[in-house]
Length: 382
Image (tube, rainbow, N blue to C red; front, side, top):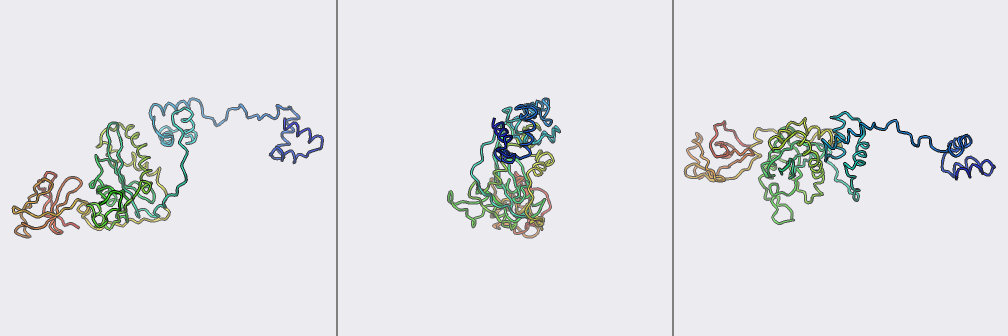
């Protein structure tokens, strides 16, 4: 009706085509096209011919049903993004992520995300890999009926996960294992960002600053390696690792379920075979560092395992034995001195449960987890 009125006024010479276009907020060419169609077909000529037409790019019904059935039968609980990756990689259905998400939401299979909160500015990443790493543990039901801690060591600069494995409970030994894997594969790094767990720091008063002059076993080991240990004082400060664990808690249990994994040993083997999960995760979530190069430096030495161990001083008894955690460790006869009675020695406990006794830089003996001496070549500690 609006167009008819303006058309009559234009035909009567009271309005120009340019003025009609301005009133309708369209281009002059559009006004001319509408006038030709109106003159040929009347009001019906103004109806868009595309209305009621099926888009040539519309997905076939059988493909829509197949995607919905795949989600229900194999990928129930996956996020839209995770499911879309599986569609493309495993099932060769090359639809866009937006199409997949809207299809799942329309079918009620995936809920719409809540509106984002107020804008918050993230801390800038370190410009080079190896400048700062994050280490943290997440307790979760990774397989049905089993709650384990997942220990992850990742790079701040590009999100690369260098080490990930399951343990019954996070602690000093699990932290040593994560750090050892990184150093053996890539070298020494500059700093490590962690929470204030008791195996990382001693905190004399709840909520207070950590005691940097009273190092834990883990802090002592990093000091020996020249790596700075940085404490985070809030979950927000560890936002990068918190976001990583949200992703892993969503994706990893589903991947383990798809692989039919039900125990920790198999789950750790799954993570070690990096082509199955970690390498794919790093490809998907890795970001480009702001500068080229690396801050990793080679580890010079052969005694990394001796540094990354619990070390405690003991005094040797009259029978050349040392008591350690309920076990009696017998020091064998030595050609360097007649005996070690009353000598101060250092007991090392390693993540695999084995033990060793050092007198200064010399290893006197090594033992299994029960305290039985192992016949092995002696070596000096760093």
